[in-house]
Image 1 (cartoon, rainbow, N blue to C red):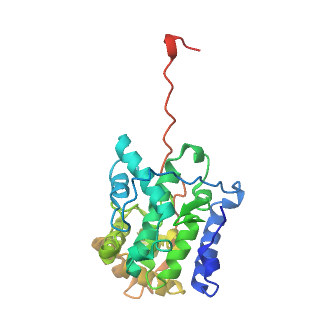
Image 2 (spheres, rainbow, N blue to C red):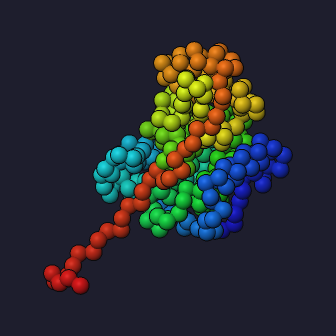
Image 3 (spheres, rainbow, N blue to C red):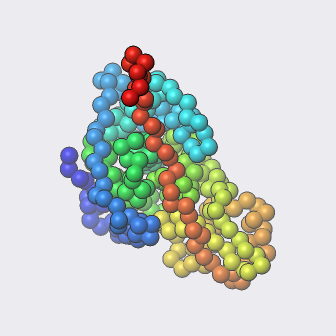
Length: 298
């Protein structure tokens, strides 16, 4: 398969290049330069009878998000659900806005498809035992099939940024598997409800531990380093943090504390990037144990 970078097909996309450069800089911080070359994931194979209409069918992804794929949950095995999820990945791999544009009538439908593809492959890569030794920075660059082409989680994120440069909240759906990053959404994203889901995800992120931090005594306000991957924000730090307080607000008591300690324009506080846990959010499933034949032990 050929490597197709969505941005290479958009030679004039300065935003996409800026996003890719920022993501690369963040990856260097976590040591991705020490990783081995990213592996190539084989194309899943779906039964020919399971070719649902997209973008309407996202139940397998919602089921995977709802049952045991998040930290602290004990994943309940379900062959039917796992088979449906594998078929869903295969459908995403072969069908999408490029190959089936008639199924994606609006820009929000296209964005929802790309976000769901990113979430689905984040789950698949994070649970794959073959990639147990890889850091998330390497998983972001792993080759994956999407819509009849080959890309990566990083490539999908760059394409979403290029398609919606006005909407930085989309980046909150695109945690590739960092433990300290934004929480994965509880359901698949739908084009018809994208605006509502953006608001809900921003609210969840604003309440997540470590996204915002305030040291009122020392006049320090911190926001997660993950926000460096959010596009469409002002470049200067005070304006950027003020905009983030509007888009991803912390709980009201914390927000009131920020205003009291830092002032409405944040002029009384040092604004910093809060560190993030770059460990893996998802742990691979152990391979099934073979039963001992004849009761003999090695």
